[in-house]
Length: 357
Image (cartoon, rainbow, N blue to C red; front, side):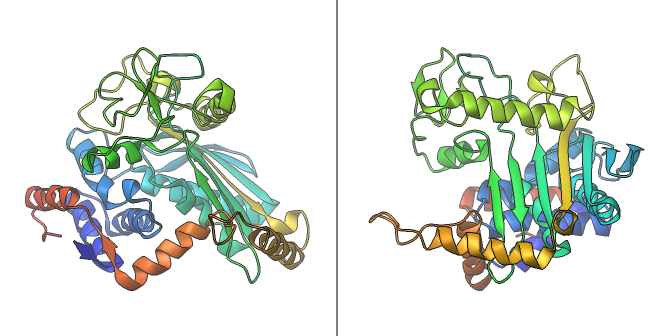
């Protein structure tokens, strides 16, 4: 099924409102999810909507959160998301970071008591229009085994950085600290495809291409896949995100992070509140004149894009290029939704008494 971004946005808003969200929060959630679909991150777009609704049905997600600052300094803040959807909580946190950066040059916000927040890049990119660099990261439920471990202790823990340029499109890095996000394993399972080598291991620590590896007791691998290819570096990146997002804010960390899927029970004896995020904004002119910086960013981007490319590829891409190309294509031609997701969403519409997709 092919649908326009506006159609998906309306459907998502209706679903959140039917579940009790106010119109502002519903619009924020919809924009974040549709942004993922537009940028080609199908695993984190409307396909995730049912997961948020199921968490709400189990009282694990608050559709009317009192998102509030619990502690702050001129450049920092600790935000309590009140168990709201991370799609909304993270946007509020970035707004606070931007306000602080406007006042003192940089703003850094730790978040606790939140939920899954969609794609990290969406939140980081909110800083771009302010001539700021946006930084966003979150911890997620434990699916990843550290190097040399067979135990799940870390999440896929993404990092995003958005950097403005002048005439060139912005530099937007949005990456998991694993070879692939968990949603890509789910996509492979829906399509009955093997996963690539290096994405996961069995419960005994052996390499596997089974798309059901996690459901069979296995674990995802850190970026690098194995020690010889640098998995210790991916492990370090994932650990850094976990500590900044949760140990610093008072959220759950490591194996205590609650799962996004509603059919799994949160780990017992939590060490914090909900899921954690770490969000920052840096005013460019806190370092050098913004126009001067952006001119040099154009030069940096063009230098890399115009570098000698290998024969198998037509050009060298800059982080964010591929997503931007997909977004332009999908804005023009619509977004394809997998039949399995369409069926799930239409069942959701029946439960919520809203119009079908």
